[in-house]
Image 1 (cartoon, helix red, strand yellow):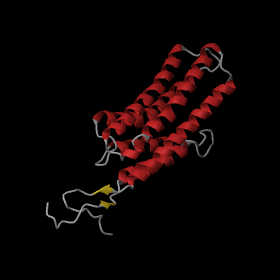
Image 2 (cartoon, rainbow, N blue to C red; image 1 turned 30 degrees about the vertical axis):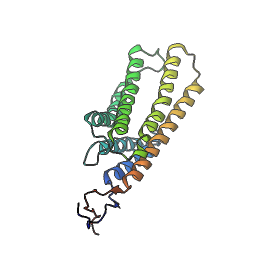
Image 3 (cartoon, rainbow, N blue to C red; image 1 turned 120 degrees about the vertical axis):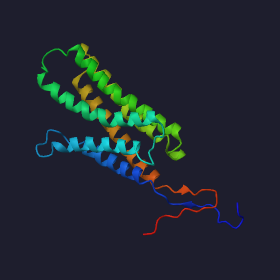
Image 4 (cartoon, rainbow, N blue to C red; image 1 turned 45 degrees about the horizontal axis):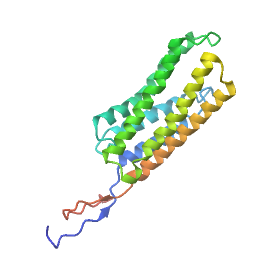
Amino acid sequence: MDAAAPPARPVRIVRPTWVWAGGVLIVGTLLGLMPRSVGGTWWLPWLGMILVAGAWILFAVGRDRAVPGASGVVALFVLALWPVASQIVWRLLTPGFDPNAATPTWWMIASTVDALVPAVAAVIAALAVWRGGVVPREFRVVPLIAAGLCIVPAIAFQIGATAMAMSGGVSAGMFVGLSQFASLCAVVGLVGLGVVAIVSGLQPRQAAASGTVVYPPAD
């Protein structure tokens, strides 16, 4: 290398996909908190769910996708599309379900599968980020933490719901408490992941060591 060549230096090259995905994830998660029973705003939770799905797709595509391998990309697409499809299917099934009747076995099995599929997809995607080497090292553990916050309380809620449905051994208050705690943990995990995505998307990257300095585009 020419001794007179300028040394490599950090330059601010943002990853706009991560910034957009993080912002969309935060907004979508917060919109999902809106109660579906409110008359004029019933559509806001649906919009939030679609925005969250869009955030996962943004993380999975493009030049700066967060997961380099095919397994991570597929996992993110499952994570994006499964909740939307699930909501539509449950909406179609609910009118024919009698809340006063005993919970059928197929309903409990379907509920378990419905919770398990996105949980597995989230773990696969988080592991893909951890192993992929695309995300800055100091942020690679964050998707695993977010996945844990979303999955572990949800599993506890599912176990409690199943136990209450089968034996009545879980009180309604405990059922509601587990549901609210699981929702709170999921919100913290997703909003935190969105914030970290924005921060990591704005992190400077090291210019190539060949002596060629990459400058940000002029305004």
